[in-house]
Length: 301
Image (tube, rainbow, N blue to C red; front, side, top):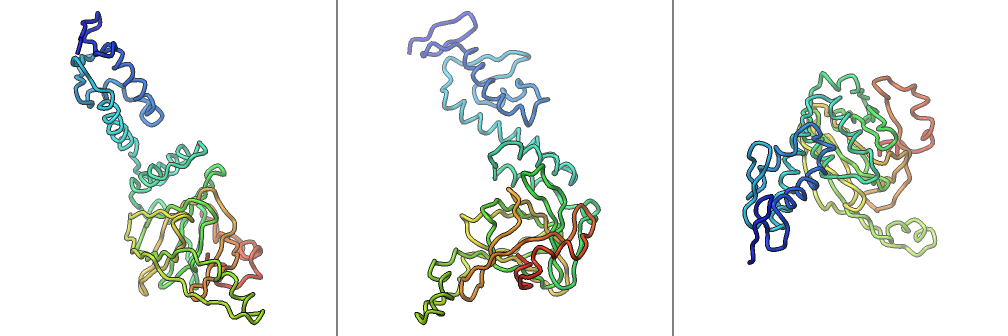
């Protein structure tokens, strides 16, 4: 390799000086300024292999492969992300979520990290926790500037949801208290949707029970994620003596979803309602007006 000495230090065989490479690294590291704007870029440079932080300038060896720099950039960005996830309160989490949803693309991994970073503190969310004796409740915490709905779901002993989809939205769920069992299902085959019409016409049709494809129990502070491409799910409080509270984020917000009969796979449209908003109980008529004609199981999507 023909290496030439440049006025700014060493130079690679590609004709790029060490300062050229350092500038390239700096520009790429600036991608992280939205989450760590107050931390000087030079504090990160020394984490990259072969780049030594010396006071306010860096000295590069004779040859620094660009791929090595790019690989290390990913690790540095992860470190920056971790530093940004200093979430100690529910308000901190809500503030970070607003920032995360400013654009049009949802970074599922980053939002999951935000949920994981928050550690449940009942003093902060008990205002939003409203229970009903007969079914679980959906309690709105924040409307996310129209980009998402953040809510507490409160589950009495043995309460269970129907098998349901998420209307093409992202669903993040974090346990705040107690435990919940999540059971996932694949989408039913099209023939299941036509069971009723086939039977009415005398054709019979196949009735196919939906089969679980996965199951997990979430304990306090654990997080899970689902969207319609991953399947459907049913959520239940497995305890008959303890209540549970979970934090959910749906993006974009939706007002209806589909409920599925596990025995046949037949789907039914369901309106979803809130039991309370921002800690205030909604009037019974307002909460149930939009779905008063639907069966009770439909109100529990």
